[in-house]
Length: 269
Ligand SMILES: Nc1ncnc2c1ncn2[C@@H]1O[C@H](COP(=O)(O)OP(=O)(O)O)[C@@H](O)[C@H]1O
Ligand SMILES: [Mg+2]
Image (cartoon, rainbow, N blue to C red; front, side, top):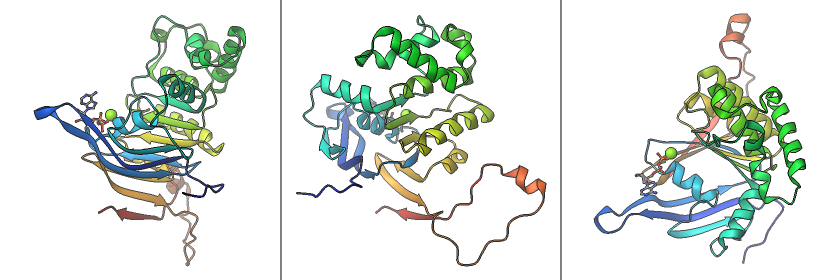
């Protein structure tokens, strides 16, 4: 039996495997994943297409179940939970941001953002007020009554993020949240995720863009259904010799957000 301390991990995966298909077509999308996530981490997951990133997020988000292995969420096994209990945990604790946004086309922006609150006991009007407040945080207050097709790509993704955050989830799962956006819109989204992270929430984000990993505190690469490398940011560890700060405006402009990272790569065997 393990002792639960104040810092017990929010997510703990042990030898997780996920099989798709049967017979000849059988393959493991996840093939032995061990992963421990502490509260407040901001993890970026990278890796080639098909290596299992989305499958992993779906399992963590209780949208899918592993074939083998153990998943502890807040120290408790999720294996035997009923579908309705899963749905309730998702609604209370987990926010999803998908690459293709998944806004519902026949609902306006306000109703889209209010959707995750349908599971709460909040009366309808209160849900709309909460959604409206969240949209204002994202400078979308004037777009409340727009339909999804009337928004730009960046606005659509901000609506999707507002929707993911409206139920105040402690875990945010983002699958290539900036995949369809230009670099400027991508950084706007990343700044918003950083704000959410600073409030103490846990973020797990899949990305193809190595530049965006500077926002994360930990970078994981996957290969063939396994974790390949796992790199934690060691910015807290101060260098012994003080580094010289670059002088002049030009260098400042060149890297506005690039925090200097000292990182240690751990190659998994
Ligand atoms: N629902 C499914 N049915 C069958 N195969 C699937 C399914 N979902 C994913 N796969 C397969 O599992 C592997 C991992 O997929 P995925 O997790 O989507 O990878 P990634 O997100 O890294 O691109 C791929 O080979 C994919 O074809
Ligand atoms: Mg994917």
